[in-house]
Length: 190
Image 1 (cartoon, rainbow, N blue to C red):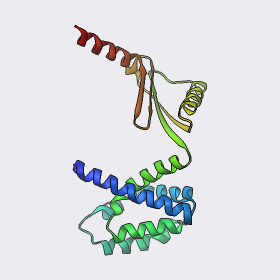
Image 2 (cartoon, rainbow, N blue to C red):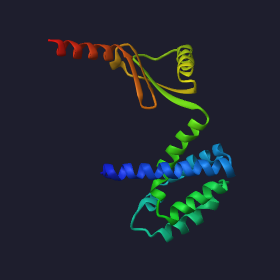
Image 3 (cartoon, one colour):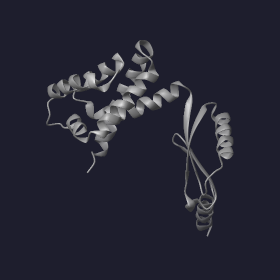
Image 4 (cartoon, rainbow, N blue to C red):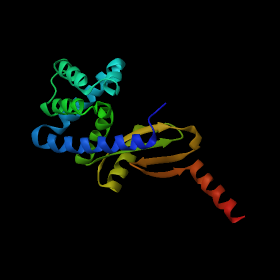
């Protein structure tokens, strides 16, 4: 069972504040790319050791014990930037290590914004040729004025055409989408 929706939104807001602050600090005191890689590495370690992740999120374990664990782990986590180390200690002191994965996600998004990159998800009814993907990437780059990272997937239910999602905007040019809109229009006109 997951966290209540209001708690999830509160956690996302807190993670966003930490990620923004981390990006500002990393721009002044470190390499933002390195900090991003550090975060991904730490999240990977925690994900690959579920018991460690459980300790980090458990409300029954006092913050002082979590801080001691973080301080013991830091030398074993490799060559982390001082900014990343400070974040981990700060989160452990405030008993906010449960936000680490969301902080990492938001930080990666903010880093992409900083680099003027946007992520596009493209779904088609059949697999696209690499040349087609490159053409779509170029067209999306011209339309957005940003560099575009493309993630392509196949969904035969689309019947044909393409569905593109850039951030929260969806452009549905699929045959299934057209048929659905036509069906809706016909049902409202009758």
